Length: 259
Image 1 (cartoon, rainbow, N blue to C red):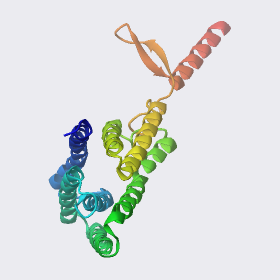
Image 2: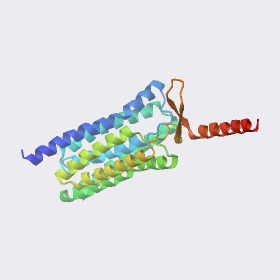
Image 3: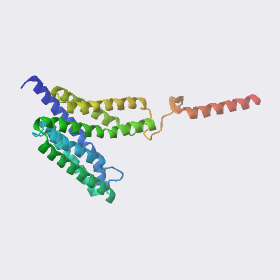
Image 4: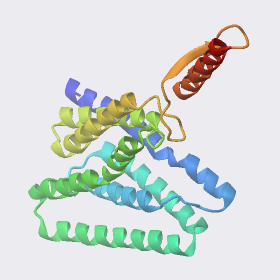
């Protein structure tokens, strides 16, 4: 085995571990759903779209297209987990949410099957990488609507509460690993979406740095002054309180000067 093939395998295995960890993140949400026996306000749309994404990448990694085991393994695992998440959502969802999630899942599966049949029947073997790879890239780019929405909310509210930094960091390293994998393999269809994901993650870091001082409730922390505390040290005093205190002192001094 050449050094390039070894590096590709090592990076691919690390990428599988990182991606699998990200696929497990919703487990926290669905644990709460099972305990409450209700999905509440949680939307099932992200899991349906991720299901489509995993189906497409499993097809891309299959012997009918690129025959890439490491792509099949992680997206196969993701496919199984998304199916579990969707099943839980259908079990504990409202009638309306069940119709949306069930209908969306049915649409995704039918669309994928028809696409796969068309590719296998109409597209020559040497052109399948281009066709299926392009579809995968387009779907991946459409999935970036979610982080874009989160970034817009951060700018609008001046708070990072809607953009957890831990998830952004995990997504960054995941994108970095798969970008490296695509670069080593020379696969632009893996390189492009993950490289774009890196750009979004870096943008999120910049926003986080700009709005890191925001409260978790969405309010921006005002500038502070220092005041004596009961322990003899100093506590932070919001500028509004400091102004009020300063005005009170001026009033007291004014009263004294007139006495």
